[in-house]
Amino acid sequence: MTISVIGLGKLGLCIAAVLAKHYTVVGVDTNNNHLKLLIEGKKPIKENDLDAWLDKYEKSILCTNSFENLGDIVFVVVPTPSIEDNTFTSMYVENVLKQIQKKLTVVIVSTVMPGETMRMQKKYPHLNLIYSPTFIALGSVIKNFLYPDFIIVGADKNTEGLDKLMELYWKICLSLPPIIKLTTLEAEIAKLALNCYITMKITFANQIGNLCYRLGITADNILNAIGMDKRIGNLYFKAGLGYGGPCFPRDNLAMAAFMKKVKANPRLLKTIHSLNEEQIEEFVDRIIKQKPKTVGFEGVSYKRGTDITEQSQLAKIKSKLEGKGYDTIIGKGDINVNWEGVK
View 1 (cartoon, rainbow, N blue to C red):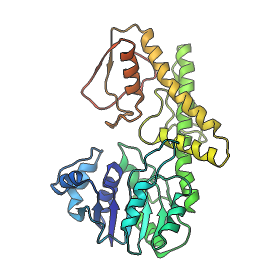
View 2 (cartoon, one colour):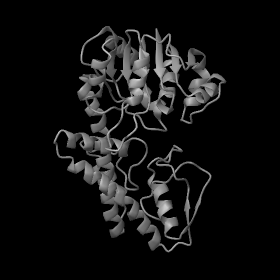
View 3 (cartoon, rainbow, N blue to C red):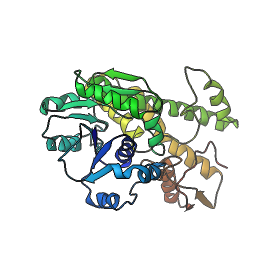
View 4 (cartoon, rainbow, N blue to C red):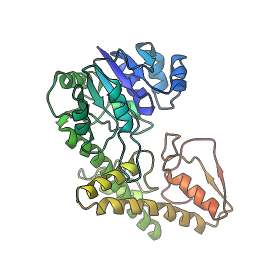
């Protein structure tokens, strides 16, 4: 069976590399410079474990800018940028669907707003659309794809393509995860809701951290203890900087915008966003109290293990300090520090 992956960015290329272990993969991207590097055997994406997977399986990946000869199952992994009202546009997803003339099963991996898959299914009835978002973190994309806690497939009808997709997941995923079948609307909300819950958990941990900082005690001692409760858990439960990156901030705002649209109260999500922004000033104040001559940064990525600075609180702290006249220096590494306090 041949599989297509449309969009060979940080997520799409990792998915293509993993699929290439078992299938022939047609990787499609419209960025010709990006394709040229891949065809030449170069590595345009920096992601843990990706180089090793490409070195081993890249011969099973045909990279092209053509939408001809697509596989039996097509994964769409293209950007869905936030727009002015904080929702996402599906423009790039639709640009892909317009190019597919054959009757194929198309798996939308890109995060879309609730209701979008059903809307696009009506617009492109010859396609069998399935919404199956990933729950991964940059820096561990391949590991997360191979060992997911669970998989969601959102479909509004049972088809042969749905069965093939589930077989593919059981073959690829080494954790043998449960596969949860939902409607497309349920799956779209589940994707956003999970990320919003994590932002709430991070924000709660930081509120406890801010309290403990003022009391001169170690927040993580407390958080590690209460995280032993199975109802809470220790993941994403450390005191430090607020959340950032390309997913959590925008997903939180998008869910709030959707809730407002359907006249549900998004107060919790708005409060989480406000408290997260306040965490920047919290750390700026802590640093200034130390009366430093120069403030050093090990890196300004939004989290450990990645060089991405999108919505990085460290980058914002650095900028604010410079705006207040402080000198800053930055190390050569791309890995940041999740400070509990200022040393």
